[in-house]
Amino acid sequence: MIVADKKREQIIDGAIKRFSHFGIGKTTMNDIAEDLSVSKPSLYYYFPDKKSLIVGVIEKVFTDYFDLLKKKYNPDASLETVLYQTIDIRSSFFLKYFMLRISEGLPDIFNDDSMKKKLTALKDNEKVFFANIFEKAQVNGEIKHESMSHVAELYLESLMGLVNMCLLEIGKDLTPDKKAVNKMAQKQKDLSSIFIKGLKC
Image 1 (tube, rainbow, N blue to C red):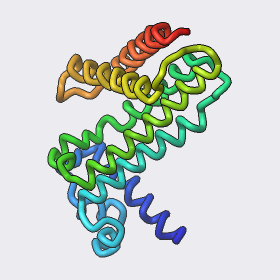
Image 2: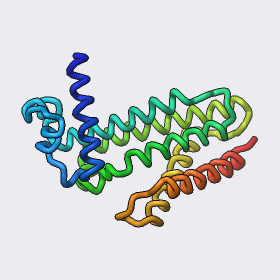
Image 3: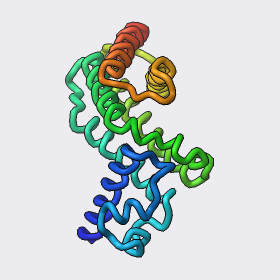
């Protein structure tokens, strides 16, 4: 079982490298098999098709992201410190995995019901995590609101809005560099400060 899990991880890591370099649309399952020197039957044993492999890639990225969020989270730190740290983590993942361009490589993937369920579950996990952060801040007397789940949803959607603005500014076909990502992160931190002030007791 451990060997199978390790092989699955190797395939996902290989797919991430290939997708990032050549794009999802131009990458075939054969390409990935050749890169990893594995047989096609072995590849298809773990991932029956390209869509299931993309799902595996998304789940790995999100799992790594959540694991790092939880590892770095300090419930005794101020809300501003905690949110700034999550922004730094989000920015590092954005920079690292931006070249995957999953939605561009396979546009219809988000119309798939099973894919929608998985993505919704991942987004819900993030919302729950941030709701817990805000609830802890309320217990500490930093903020006050009747629904921290609603606060978390608004906050995450606001951050995503700034990401989309960043992408519009740099243009569809360009890759954001560290300077652009740092600028986006600073705007997210400024927004976080304003957001916290609005929730003060």
